[in-house]
Amino acid sequence: MSENQNQLFKKLSDAVVNMEEEETVILANEVVLNHYDAYRAIDQGLADGMKRAGKLFEEEEYFIPELLMCSDAMYAGLEVLKSHLKSDDIGEKHKIVIGVIKGDTHDIGKNLVKIMLEASGFEVIDLGRDVAPSDFVEKAKEVNAKIIALSTLMTTTMDGMGEVINILNQQNIRGDFKVMVGGGPISQSFADKIGADGYSANAAEAVRLARRLIGGGG
Image (cartoon, rainbow, N blue to C red; front, side, top):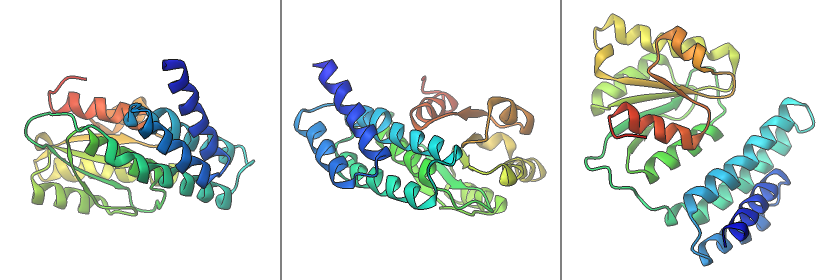
């Protein structure tokens, strides 16, 4: 059974990387029919396919049009699977403000993290992309969020993440919020350098990190 499940997740990943939107939908429906874990199907299938597509983009085998078609396939699969995610009971719904830092409009990774966090019982306030550092702080204060989650795929916008933490320090409210960072060029050493509370390399890891940051275990 688990072998069939893993094969299906691999096919999902392949369908995304091959830009096969209809095939992705068929396979996602197969996941549902077989009562396989939708969370794992997203993580090991759809997200994995996008990760592979991102690599091809970096290697200049894929360009923007191909990447967009891959993301269309991924979103079509997500549409099928997201209503079958089991919401974990983590008691009170902790709020997370999430967004892509100013200067960057890449939001595929951020959207995946958002879906995974919502599936795990968090209330996610999505500010979208190209978000000014001060907007993260203001929104987190307004909604009384526990966590601010920052994403970027560009090295040129990484400094904006540090700026969010600077603003929190300037306003003497750094201790009120946990700050987590992620995205292609981000690393644990960068997170440490700017004083972030945590870094995650992918969507599933982001959920584990968020739980740890609010004291809910991994």
